Amino acid sequence: MNGLYLHVPFCEARCSYCAFVTWADRHEQQGEYFAALAVEVARRCEGLALDTIYFGGGTPSLPDPALLDGILQCVRDVATILPDAEITLEANPESVSPERAAAWRAAGFNRVSVGVQSFDARVLEAAGRLHGPDGPARALAALRGAGFENLSLDLIAGLPHETRESLRDSRRRALELAPQHVSLYLLELDEAGKHSPLAASVRAGRASVVDDDALADWYEESREDLEAAGLSGYEISNFARPGRESRHNLKYWTCEPFTAAGVAAHWFDGMRRRHNLAGFEAWQRAVALGGDGEAPESRDAEPSDLAQERLMLGLRLSKGVDLAELERRHPGCCARFAPLLEQAGEDGLIFRDGQVVRLTLRGALLSNELFSEIVAG
Image (spheres, rainbow, N blue to C red):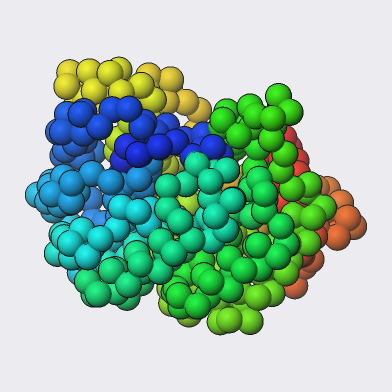
């Protein structure tokens, strides 16, 4: 089975922590964008059997629902969407209404991931969010009224003005909404977020964020609270009720192939990580000329080091990595990784249960450092 990621880059405003390819000033080009996206989808998805589809962004809930419906119909025209496929839409609270929710449900979406980030007014303002503390409750009421039963909430820990108490309150309010899934991301301003407006403000001394030690304590407390509420931590940043794990995102962590379409979209063909052009005009022109917006350097990329990726990404999951299975897939890899894993064990970052290795809590908190060593090795 295959998954499909579709990038929708439009936003009402850019969040301070965001380093993704998004636009807050191109609303008049939405029609052009979705027309080009339909062309790319028709070429890239032909003949595929899809069990997950994920509209990410950006703010996919912002455009006219008819545009999203049109893309899903393009997918149906060229690919097979399995009857039990998970079809996810990312949404911001302020762009959810009863009418839009009903249109999304009618189009075929069956899961919505709502970007809440915080319930604290000061934190929301500093982050550039457009919704207030009561926005998520109204959004989930509209979604449930339209028949959605699989709802996820995103929270970010460590934003400016956040305190341990305000994060506790955000968790409490999130859990009161009884979501099936919660993503809790720790603010990152290094590789992942170094190009964000917030990172620039911190470097210039105009803003401050929570230090790493405090953030580690907050994460540990958050994980305990979420699991006590019945949301099991199946991945470092993701918690779900039984059977409500994000099936699409699990493809990323288990190195299953998935395809993608849209400006700057990334995908994995089973051997290589590939990506589209990041500029709108360049991507649109490439699609118009050949029906494919893939960046030239992506086509020439070396095959991915799959043993390395399966170890690194698999360690993100609570079930860990079965070294016997990894060795079966990639003969000789366990000898290659043995010194690194032995050192990680001595440092208290991982523990072994027979042939299975898993992150400790300390390992989860220092996972970026461990993963960097895996990549370097």
